[in-house]
Amino acid sequence: MYQIVAREDLTPQIHLLEIAAPEVARKAQAGQFVVIRMDEKGERIPLTIADWNREKGTVTVVFMEVGKTTRKLATAQAGESIANFAGPLGLPTHIDKFGTVVCVAGGFAIATIVPIARAMRAAGNRVISIMGFRTKDLVFWEDRLRSFSDEVIVTTDDGSYGREGVITVPLRELLEGTEKIDRVIAIGPTVMMKFSSLTTLPFGVDTIVSLNPIMVDGTGMCGVCRVSVGGVTQFTCVDGPDFDGHKVDWDELMTRQRTYLDEEKQSLELWQHSQGVR
Image (cartoon, rainbow, N blue to C red):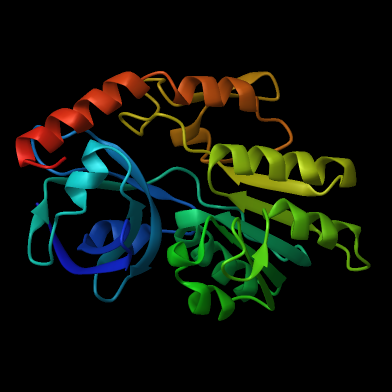
């Protein structure tokens, strides 16, 4: 069992859990993830590692309430425990001194981009970060990301905070500007990563994305997380989660992500009914 040592509600639907997992904390690196299971009857879900503390032996994860398991996980409190916490899994993000790196994050993927921006800054890069949200009420960790960035641009779809519009607009402006952009890292909803990659493609800028397909075991055995990259089948859990955004078959990925939508909806409805939630 893995104890939850701290909990924080970043927004009404986005939550942070700090979990005691010394062996995972000892090896965790930016860009990796864990697979958790709340109890013996729970499903396994992947969550990106948002932070870690090697001295305390803790790992921090941030998640958004979407389906049954994340809704159930949102009820967990400090002092309680979860059954399984496997990791760190996946290959860490490649960190090097590239020059100017643009970190693009949409929604709760801010928690994923922060340790990457931190590592890129520590490696000597100039880091420009773009944060995109639907509305002001969903903004979190802005100050944290600013502490690891030379420049931060915030956008909201409805214009309630920062710039109005989607993140690809300031991304294109940077690419068209006088400053040479050496690498773009885009993390967030699949459609956001797709269009970020399409935006950078004409400029020939290396673009790395962190994919989030359906996943089960997280060790390359089940094949559920397979994606097509450059016409080759890759397993996100062991070959990724980072891939060249210009080579990902985005349409195939989005089709596969919709495979179990009906079952996921039914599972959530049954759980809500059992909890007396409407």
